Length: 216
Image 1 (tube, rainbow, N blue to C red):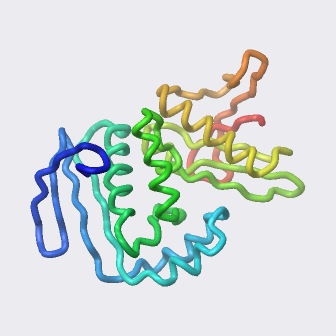
Image 2: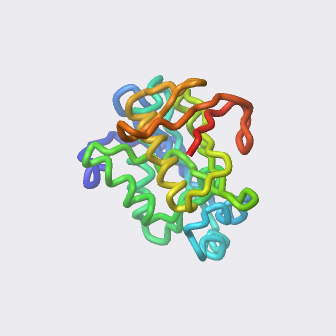
């Protein structure tokens, strides 16, 4: 943390497998568990960008749990989580990080977290963007927006290419979190003066509860 982020910590052992430290209003615990996560390999299959992810994750024999507690501000807490996790992911033999419902490769997480140095939010380390075939079209959704007190976002049946849909969902999630924007039923959204995409709030299709559907 000192080398990566310039944060000097007073780390104290809680037991032989756990380290704890306080930073500002947060308490962080890092715990080593000498056993694999049973469902991790199955969830690695949800990362369509990691071709051999399942095979690599199947090799893991232990894991570390990172818990950031006490902060009442989700953004501050999430930034601390990404910094701690990124530093841990640079350790030898680390494969990746399990974040329901997927697993991210270590080097990808570290690369994204490095954007914090440029005051860019590492949104892909917080939010999962799911893309799936939907008939002749594609649909997509976010997973993790509710942690920030916001609705999950969905695009249902678009002609857009999967990569373009992924980028679009990521751009919207970044915009919403960074600006604390509440998307409402009947509103429009656009990233240019001409773009006015309709928003509808209704029961989620691929997510639990209500979600914001964007016509894209």
